[in-house]
Amino acid sequence: MGRAPCCDKANVKKGPWSPEEDEKLREYIEKNGTGGNWIALPQKAGLKRCGKSCRLRWLNYLRPNLKHGEFSEDEDRIICTLYASIGSRWSIIASQLPGRTDNDIKNYWNTKLKKKMMGMNPSALKKPHQVNLSPMLQNSTPSSSFKNNHNSYFQPHLPFTGSESISYSSLPSDNYSTFESLQNYQVSSVFMETSCSSSSDGSCNNNQINHVKEAELGYVGDGTFGDQIIGRLSYLNSGVEDQDTLKLVPSNAGRVSGVTDEETRLWGESPLEYGLEEIKQLISNSSCNNFMLDDSKTGEMVMYY
DNA sequence: AAAAGTCGCAACCGCAAGGGA
DNA sequence: CTCCCTTGCGGTTGCGACTTT
Image 1 (cartoon, rainbow, N blue to C red):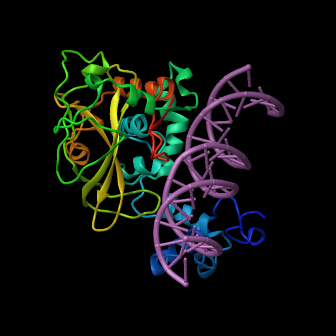
Image 2 (image 1 turned 60 degrees about the horizontal axis):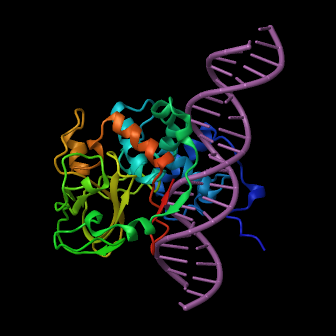
Image 3 (image 1 turned 90 degrees about the horizontal axis):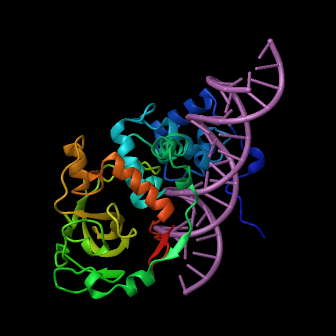
């Protein structure tokens, strides 16, 4: 027995939306809202469309304040940096680009930006596959493990609370060429501000301060500069659990020109500290060398390469 | 001028998660 | 606790527009 269809396929129209349908949908939602039920909406709005289709059309095209047209250099950089950090999690990426939808960004990445960034290195665009990160973490000697400021080594799961800051300062270093040199990283803030979301649900969590409940940290890369210590934060936020990704950057990193104060505010010290060359390298690393966290695994950390 | 190839975007599909009954 | 419904997400497809041969 198959999965129940979300709507009566025989009686719904598919394909491109006509201006009349757009108008009906826009008018209905502006007057009544979505009513929290997309499935029932098309019938109420007098549309012969699947609820999912209505939702998609509204979120990706009709919703107010959507930006259409060319992506700016800044947007390019944000997309590239985030893609290198978290992979194809378009909704998260979209949440950092007001007015852009996940679908927009996904299409833009797949059709233009990927080629723009990686034009000279097509082999870097092959599909990632998974490797298990656990052995790498387990086999790390103490000298190359991450220490927090209580002198304990990080495990893939490291619960912590409050505003404790994390720093890695015990390792020797005068260059960035080795794993050992991943030092002086710190979480610039464990109280992170989230920007207004433009993700496909259309919701908007303006400037909420989320209290970190738990962090999962892992080392991402092969030990060369451009690698990342990347992690995931769970928040305690008035009963609402949410997650975000953090990236630890060298505390002595300089600012990259062109990074706005607004971006810095949104991101603290993190991803936008990269210039285009570093981004390119990160993309290359994340799909060839290749490391992306798979958050579907919790007991052990998994990477793609 | 026409056919073939490529590109870009909108839309669809199916799975997983969330949440209420 | 389980089931079922709805939503959200990311991958994929379809197709019109444009370019090349």
